[in-house]
Length: 174
Image (cartoon, rainbow, N blue to C red; front, side, top):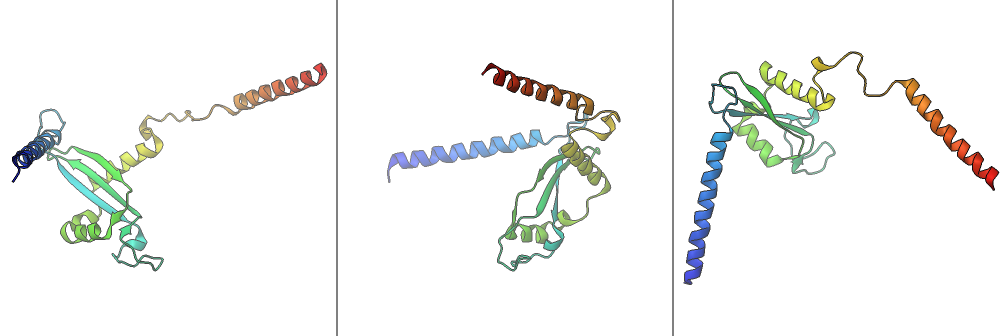
């Protein structure tokens, strides 16, 4: 065999093992509880929500066609520590394969259960912030996203008046 091929294979194996080792060390450090004084490892909790029509796993879709993916699915990932700290890590709306869904149902059936109260509160709070961009407790009752109507009407009339004056001035100048 070629010596360069053997040396290249050994170098690639060493790079792969080193990369894998550094990745695992990073995950051990990155997945620590950020609460001051705790420092324990957090665990990931996953929930999968399916559309009511897709509750039964079938290779036949509701349209009667063959399918390999479930498109109407929400995957939620939480991080939780023993000290009570919970954080939403990711919300994913990407399709999930039939194989992955069946594997999760057989091996990790807890993903399909209703979330605990603490988890549901964290998920609800994150979704509320995602859709409203502010915490509901921080909202001022008098605050609004649009300026007052009289200002909008006044600006519109000024703009229209300027356009009309410009059109009239151009006709007189001709």
